[in-house]
Image (cartoon, rainbow, N blue to C red; front, side, top):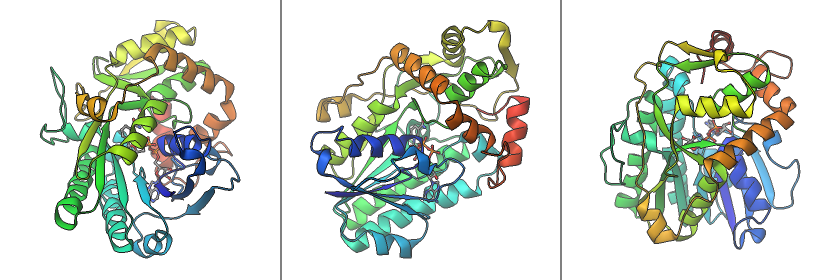
Length: 346
Ligand code: NAD
């Protein structure tokens, strides 16, 4: 089997590819992988093995139909991770989110259809549902995205649905809760806080810190995506959750303990515009249909994640500050550095 993985140099995509190449899923030791990744500020070629007999790495843009049509023949499946993924960046500037997340998903679906790829998994997010004060979302819940990031993912989900309904493309959509784990870019909450604490700096907590998220280890997410690839039904959506719901205050307290830091390092900063209060998924469908269950508890996964950042300072310092201490090639660099200094990035 040959699979194209878009966005395979990012946090989640690279975990999926490394696990595939390591034979980490039943039958995956004979799978060949093409990674298509534009290597934006969030993508890093070094997240993948430098050379592997079953890996082809193609630097390129998922928004380019001709590139996709050239590459896709011979692939049985596409797992589509490539996206702009950081909510704060979408609040600051949303054009790239619409281009990559909507236009790129359309280009992938269209090229898969044109080249006869048999199976597509579109990796989406729980953020498409909006915010929920009580209870949890099923796959039937309405899409009410609040940030430009979430709106671009919701739009992509609808394009994917249309390619199933109109053209019969065998595409499934996954909607996962917040991920954490190794190789996550230090712009996101957990790695930002861990790396700040390891540097002896303060941590910037948005608003009251009472926003609640469901946290899932990246390894559990990727296993769920692979089970959807193999066993998911065409045109269906699968929520992927953990049941591990924590407020940002609670996550911060756990990180302070793991890093031996004092609560006085918490700085409350002005809340994110339109900050969703709570996300919670009902993932009964994937558990009952595909036998999925998360395997890593938040306590264990978080401790391992902190250890990974402690042991890999060169990786996160390059992502956070650039190899020369600056981020000259990153169009968002100035904003990111400023935000990080002021402590509002997450
Ligand atoms: P990430 O930002 O770490 O990685 C995104 C990758 O996509 C990078 O390697 C980047 O270079 C690549 N990319 C961006 N634009 C591209 C383009 N135009 N062409 C080709 N490659 C491009 O993101 P992530 O956290 O790994 O998220 C992966 C997917 O999972 C996204 O679709 C995201 O919406 C979804 N998701 C993420 C989470 C989470 O908590 N991180 C939760 C649920 C769903």
